[in-house]
Image (cartoon, rainbow, N blue to C red; front, top):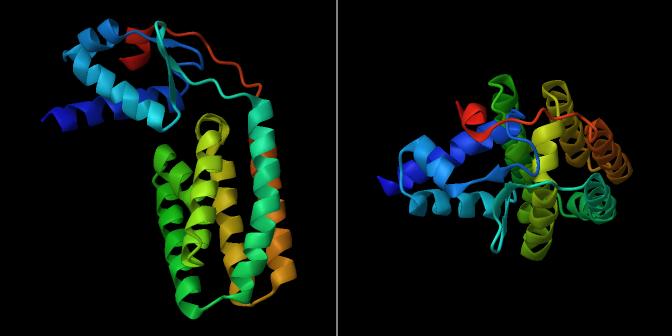
Length: 221
């Protein structure tokens, strides 16, 4: 029961953050959340810890919990590193490509499409990011998979908050084109498509979008 309650609090806060009802930097007061959800502060604390693991919330000693506020500059640096890493990963994938690996990527792209069509914002964000991690996993390179996972999670909040539905659909389409190039063993085309894709994702994030300040209970109602 406690786990499901914690999960419900996590889901509710995630939704409020994604839908811009809670802005970056907003304070998440434990007692207010406990009163709102009708639970103990211990359960609220567990939920906030989970959200901090997902980088949606930052926990500051003696100050409490706040909605994370990743900077545009951090996101730009993350994308620069990803372009370097993923160009080489794409070349290596083509060298080691197998029908089973292509099949696995196609299955992943199909799950992306489902999430995009169902307007599942957290789901589609996770799947679109995981496509890149999946490539590393299929190559058997756990270090690269972990590194990419960490890089992607560093700007997960920015992608969640600033990527529109149209851009998410575009990202999904680009993944499909990359898989076709990989299946055709066309390394140059696959690398070019991957680079263009990462540049498109970065360019589509509207970092300067304004966020109306919202009171906690109203934001969650």
